[in-house]
Image (tube, rainbow, N blue to C red):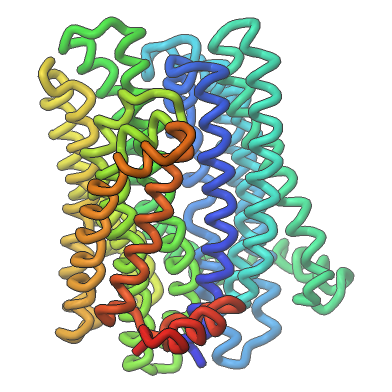
Length: 535
């Protein structure tokens, strides 16, 4: 039953994540054509700063709320869940307001002195209100996830992304006539409108899902947080969980911020002009990295579902169930991330040309492709360690990876023959290092059986076979297709179908696995059994 709830929660979040990622991939196609690669470079310089301050504002509170609410429900403390949420909401309002104002007023020195491009100031100021809005929304999402109502997060997430995409494209189109910097600023403002719509949805869902004892008592719970004596112990408990998570989450935007500083400047050392360096950085961060992060939708969804699930199992001292839940999550991670990595490698130039209109972005994408596997495993393993009471370990491990990334980026991107490929190699290697250390800690602290450790073999063999099939048949499909775009989509479809058939045939995924997928799973499993492929 627990495994089914984990799979259902992950499936709901994954579906929402897929829609959001597809919208994210969609907007980058027209956006890259509206503000061009140089505008994408400005956009990508502003976003890591925003992400950094947002994480400092949120401080890992949503995961802490999810964990505490889940623990209290497991122990029968139903009334305490509202108080946890109320304290987190007030806390995030204070921190969100502070960092939102900080970003606005520090936009000028950050642009001139830190990033070395004064044009980023417009994007930084445009996106600054989103920190407060998204901070408040994060409290609601953590509360709903702790209650295992993943559909609330899914609805909010899709709404947020949809509104964000519409407004950012519209503003970028209108403002780009005033200059590339204004177009990029219009695009970043989409985070404000998107976050506001997601927050409104969360407010509407509170009474709709009936998760509180009515609005009157809900507001009474919030007012109770003004009692300093009663609130301080809960804030301390929240922060004891949230701070390590926050430090881990900070590593990624810090890494991206350092990349935004180092890579363009080191490319100039290699002989590229400032405009060319920004253009190439747009290839890496605005295009290749976005495609690599697209398949990690599942690992993020699994991570969000794992934290409350493992926290509940750990609180009840059901350690065999903890290992079972973790094994299932790792299994699903490999099944989806390995073929995604192979597909990105084999079709790198075709995908970047199809989606962004820039074939040159395929070079860094090919070197980043393996990072899909490492990043996916890093996300799931970090959530596992957080949910079982070891939140500091993934922080330490990600820092090791970030350090390796920094060193490789600094040296390789300044070599003219390597250039932007050095940034791709550094990023991929950083994810690999973090994954290796996470794996070591999971094996030592939680324990994995030899069977679970061998989960990578069948997906890997199936994915390699898939890559060979795509490589062989793609020229044939190009001759049959009316144009390049249709031929590329046909190649992707062929790869997905062939991988699924090979994986099922060799026993890499069972009908029991398929049946655990909500709604569509039983139907697929029944069809597989009918044609004699299932096990």
